[in-house]
Length: 118
Image (tube, rainbow, N blue to C red; front, side, top):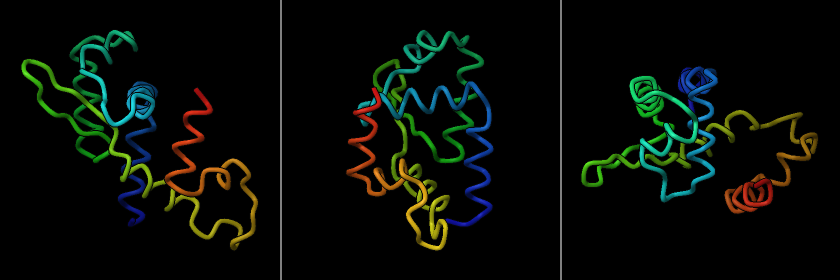
């Protein structure tokens, strides 16, 4: 991952509403959630939610798929994984300094960590 790409992703997550949407979709798993349910859960009006979903989609953190009259959104786990790897690559010159990161340093471990946190 390039630094500029990481900066775009972090900037997108730097807004409280977008971070809440992304976290909700991460927690929802690969099945995702329809837009109206996201708005209901987070208390976001449709226009505001649409703006934030479009931003997160544009940078590649989430994707939407049309289902009948609805759009189902889900997190792009590969993008999230690349960002986490970019942020923690060569941390402390390879020393074990981040205990929470070490317990989730692979995709499989991250899936277990996420399940344990809920």
